[in-house]
Each structure stands twice: as C-alpha cells, then as structure tokens.
Image 1 (cartoon, one colour):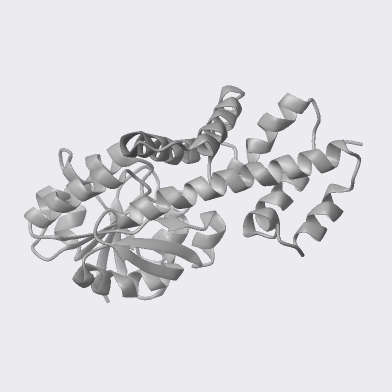
Image 2: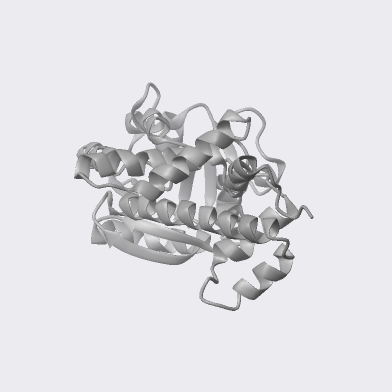
Length: 295
C-alpha cells in the first residue's frame, strides 16, 4: 500500500480519494476548510501545504480545476517541488493544457520525480462508481507505476503516449462531448416544439443510430430539468478554450467547437456558469422562446 498525497477534493476528487482509502492506501491532503466527514472517518489526514504533503507521500495526485492551479500546487511557494523526494510519482488528473503539461513533466523529472498526466472523463457519476475513463500520458515506467492506482478509480485506462498525450486526448473528448450535448439539445428542442412527447422521442432514439451515453444521461437531465452540476459549464468552457487555443496554434478550424463555446457563454451570461453542462439546452431554449416539455 502507498502513502498518497491527494490534492483537490472537489465534486470528483472526493469520491476518487475515497476509493483509494477503501483500497487500503493511506492518504494525506492540504488543509482547506473543513475536511469531508466521510474521508476523515476513513483516516485521511490534513497537512499545511503541498510541500508538507510531498514530504509525507510516495505518490502525489492532483485533481484541481485549471492549468494555473496545477502550476501553483506543484511549483508555487510551499509547492510540491519543494518537498519532492527522489522517485516520487506525481499524477495529475486535472484537465489542463497539453503544452504546459509537457513543461511540468520536465520540471518534475528534473527534480527527480516521475510525472504522469491522467485526465478523466465520466463526471461525478463515474467518479462515485469508480467507472472513470482515464487517458494517460506517461513514460512506460510511469504508466506501470500509476496503473494499479488508476484502476482503483477508473474502468477504462488507456496509455495514449508520452507526457501531454493524455491531456490532448482529454481535449478531444471534451470537443466530442460538447458537440454531442448540443446535438441532443437541438434534437429534443425540435421534437418538443413540434409537439412530440420528448420522453418517448428519447426512448426511441436510444434504440437507433443516435444512441449515445449523452442522450441517455444528459437527455434525461434535460427532460427532467435537473441541471445541478455533475460537470459545470465553466469547467467545460475552460476545456473548450484549450481546444480553440490549440486549434489556433495548429492552424485548424473547429467551427462546431466555437459554436458550442458561444452557447456555453450565453448560459454563463444568464448566471449559469455553475449549471451542469447539459444546461446548454437553456441557451437554445432562450433563442427558441420554448422550453422542452412545454405543450
């Protein structure tokens, strides 16, 4: 069993850390307010800062919102690198910029550690059920060391390539997810405005070529109007910013991604930055002056 420093106990980080505790690992984290009672009851301990966490742990896992957050945790004042021991495995499971990830990997390896980027897909439900899809960028040795821990938290673990490749895969994932959520929104909105029973429309579509997990999970959210976040719009905006910035540097056009980003921005402008990303439906409803399910 390993002593793990887990930094980032948000919507997804909490259950992920819980699975590691249940598997018998010892966990420490950075003190941020009141520690979740469930994690505390399982023995998770709090330390003053990321440096102290690194001094106490053999493995560091970060699960924080954005590129600057990872940089601050790893390299800021009192950061992980100040307490890093030779051979420490650092696994970043956040969704951040691929190029920054490559730079972070060089710095950690230069200090004697091993760096793995392992962003996840599956949302809160995937984290709770230990069914996450995990996209890994690592050396072969790094992946071999990280894999047993990743298998505790996820169901589908794929070694994509060297450091940064996991984050590239995650950006691609977020493009597909955003455009599919938009497509489901448009389909259900069309059906509703035409007077069809949207629940039956969704049921029928789930049996045909349009079937997808997003139609299943997010389509149900849209019909039931449950927009409490499994994954917040503002975080998906951050991921699409990574996609659009990367596309610009690669001289690519991603028109569908840009359109989805504008719809997310419309939601944010109406106070919806913390809605679930299925809330993109609300931007389309505002344009149509029709709410899905209205007669």
